[in-house]
Image 1 (cartoon, helix red, strand yellow):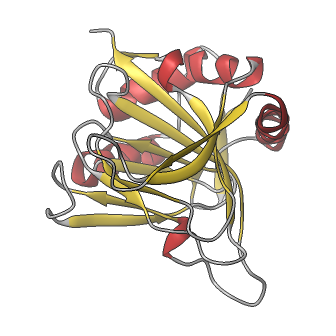
Image 2 (spheres, one colour):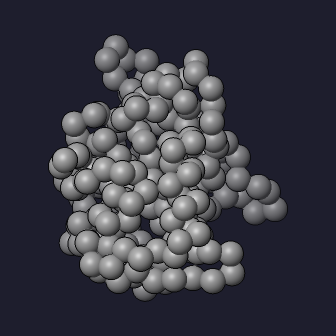
Length: 220
């Protein structure tokens, strides 16, 4: 798979084992990650064939290897309503590729490896589906790589907050809200999710999202 980094009007590919994202793009990603805990790439973050391969697998896994997660104000649980599915070989190959791991290290400063038990495909299908305020588990998901594979919203309208990721400065939502990132198809977010609280508000009518949520643990 090819990982693409957009720099103004040009794109530069990163083949497996070669993490030479162009200098300006890498500098921007590092600065975004340092300043707000979330670096955003794309669209289009992935070459079209790589993006399509992951989307096709996500849709297949939804049919054959998915389960529903629902929790509403339950003690010790994150308030949420969404669908998850196990990864397939395309996602595993992508998340473990030398190019992705080298890029993550360059952006975050950490040497990382995939946490397979914490990684999954995630689906938000209709009104009210959401992910409540939380921090990711330090040991299992020190850094998250979110790949938005397909997002849609009602015609003749703009995406609402339901298609946004809200990222806060501290470990809870009473701290400063640093950024709201809209989930656009073929966009990637590198997230400091274990240290900084984040959430997804409830979807509005006509909104849907399919994403790959890759979790990484420290290997330093």
